Length: 323
Ligand SMILES: Nc1nc2c(c(=O)[nH]1)N[C@H]1C(S)=C(S)[C@@H](COP(=O)(O)O)O[C@H]1N2
Ligand SMILES: [Mo]
Image 1: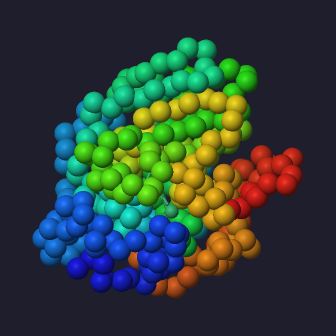
Image 2 (image 1 turned 90 degrees about the vertical axis):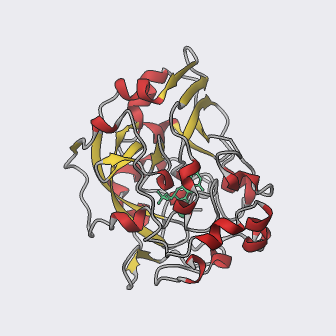
């Protein structure tokens, strides 16, 4: 069984999940009618990995040209690990998302751009893809739970989305929202979570070179567990900021309250910049374990991306930048 197959980099679920929402997963899955599905998947997690072979109208855009500016200090994580050990609470609060995420239907997929913009609009993801140029970037990813990975993402700079959206100068933040559809995402029937998943960044952050809207990985469209057809990747922040399967970008002058902040504000703040010196209330952030590796590596401030991002935070006083 997946749940018993504990690998070196995993930390116990009870440590990774806020106490206030730690429920009996088995009872919950049963209540959602998923008990049988879990029990039936006896072949082991990797054997059960689906082929992600859905017809995808964007498939011809891959592989995209690599941007050589972003280099890694560690090997690229094996694709079979980064697509079978995931956080996507819309499907499950455990890591075997791939056992459920085939239910995610990524076409048709509408994206709304609204709030403080010159003209609100809704466009299909394939129309959006026609307006941007895809490129591949190697980025490190650091989850707040202390696992990490290094991935070749394909996408376009968030800046390009701002050019399409034309926000008003009064806009200070971009609030992003994941789809809401409990029929397609059984995890959204877990009523104690504040669905839908929401995240936000400042306009400065959205304009930063590193802010990347991702549509693919490993030279192919994003597999279902990783949040297709469009997700954010912010490599200097804890992974929970990198919202998946986005359906709405709202420009606003109010700091958005994210899913995790709404759930547990004392543990998950707005800024969530990676910092090894600031522990999570329930564990240290000093080191991390790459998926597939057994020894821990030191975690770097800003996840090693300080040269690109640290200056954005120079003037900010009295706020918790690292939680
Ligand atoms: N909609 C949504 N986005 C999400 C999450 C989620 O549960 N739902 N989990 C976040 C967390 S905690 C992490 S670490 C990353 C994981 O991305 P990956 O599964 O592609 O590694 O997605 C983030 N984006
Ligand atoms: Mo995470």
